[in-house]
Length: 160
Image (cartoon, rainbow, N blue to C red; front, side):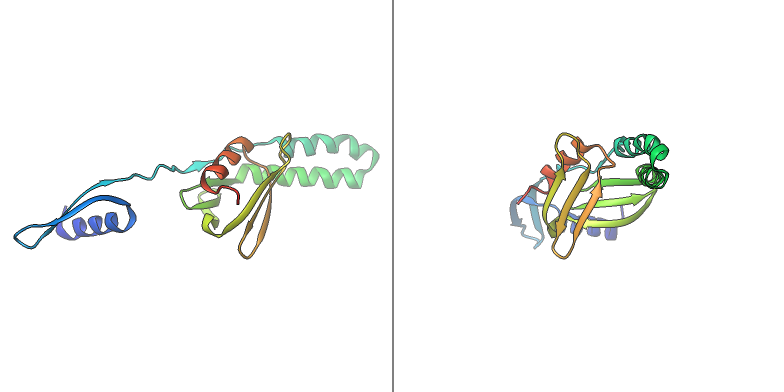
């Protein structure tokens, strides 16, 4: 490794990693840092898709179409829209943000430091995920594994 790369790597470690240790100066004037690095214990978690809500909506729309074609069609269309979103969107919980991807493209990032509150409605059949940032409120249908979603939220962004 050349000197510049070594310097950049050590500077990055000094800035980004919490250190516990001591510093000493040698007779030559160089400083030596003895430290133990505390690795980041929070890994990135990608939520698995859950097709529960879209499938229930599409199945419920079938008998409604017979009685009320317009309403049944609207419910079926909404269910198919949510099914498309379930297939294409991915939520990733990182150490500092909730990231939303469409395929490989990051489409939105929500830093936890800006969150004020979050809730999952309803416990027995979770259908809606609500969270409030400093300047905005968000409602998302539960298109992902609700148990993993709740575990990640409690670990990374405890309720206030």
